[in-house]
Length: 413
Image (cartoon, rainbow, N blue to C red; front, side):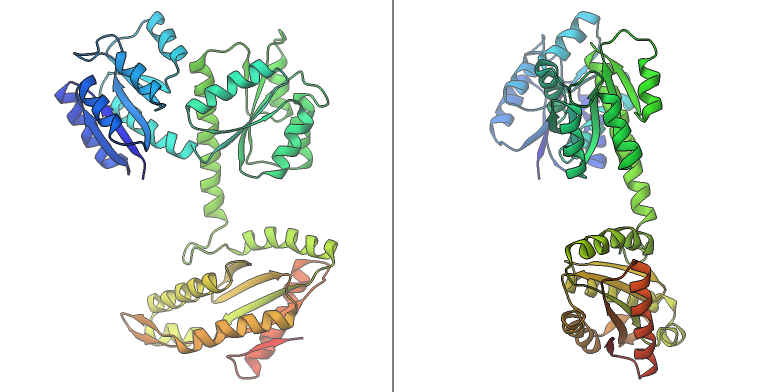
C-alpha cells in the first residue's frame, strides 16, 4: 500500500487534514509540521504516492520543502494562504501536481481528493497524437505529473491503430494537422466506424481558425484546446475527461452487471459473445455454449424463502466463476446461467461442466432458514452457428430435454 505525506505547521489545519484523510484515504499517511521533520520522514520509506505540502513553513518560508519533495520524485500538491500570478507561474513550471488556496474545509477536501485521483490515474491510459516531438513530449510530461500512463503517436494512423489495439486507452489528445491521417479523420474513424463511445477526445490546434473548435466537436470530439495553453486549463480539461469516462464506466458496469451475483448479465454476454462467436467462425475453431439451470428452484424459494434462494444463486455464481474463469459466463435470468467456451468441443465442455455438476451436488449452502442442497441441469451445443442466439436456442432445447429426463444432468446434441 503506497504512502502519503502531509506537511502543515498550523495545528488547526493539520487537525482538519487528519480528519479528512482518515475518512477519505486508504493509504499509510505520515504527518509532519516542519521541513526538518518532513525530510526525515521522506527518507524513512520509498513508497510515496504523493505529498500535500504547505508552501510556507517556519523553517522553509519560501517553498523550499516543495523543491525537496519534487527532488525525491514525489508528486506534490501545494497548500498556500495566498497566491499571485508570479507565484502561480513558478509553481506550475517547477512541476507540482496542483496548488490549493487555504480557503476552508472544501479546499482541504479537494487536496485530499486529489491524492485519490492520482492513485486512480495510474491505471488510466492517455494517448497523445501529435506530430511535433517537442509538443508531444511536453504534453506527456504534464500528464506524467498526474501519474497517467502515457501513450504517444506521431500521426493519426498510428493513433488509430494504438486505440483499436488497446481498450484501456480512455482519453485521446489529438492535434489537427498531422501527416498520414489528420485529427478530423482520426476522430471520424473512431466515432463512425469503430464506435469507441467510451473514449474521451480532446482536439488540439494552434491554427487561427475560430470555427475549428466547433468542427472538432461536430466531428465527435468532446472538448478542444488551442495551443499554447496554460497548465491549469490543460489539467482542468483532462480532469473533466477522466471524470466523464469514470462516470460512463460506472454506468456501464451497472447496466452490464447482475446486481445480485455480480456476474455479467444477458446484455453483456450477448455483446461479447457475438464477437467471440464471429472470431471462432472466422478461425474455424470449435466453440461450445452451455445453458445451465438450477433444478427445482421454485421449491427452494417456497421451502426456505427468497433470501435463501438468493444465497443459492450467489453460491452457484461464485462456484461457476472459480471453475470457469477463463470463459465467458453470465446470469441471464432467474436461476438460468450461460457459459460460452471458445476452443472446446461439446464433448470437452461436457467433461468440464460435469466436474462442476458433481461439485455442486456434493456441497451445501448454509442459510438462516436451514441447509440447502441443490443440483443443476444443462444443455450444451457446439458451433459453428450463424448467430449467438441460434446457438443459445440449441443449448436451451437440450436443457429442456435434460429437465424432462430427470434433472441433475447435462446433455449434448
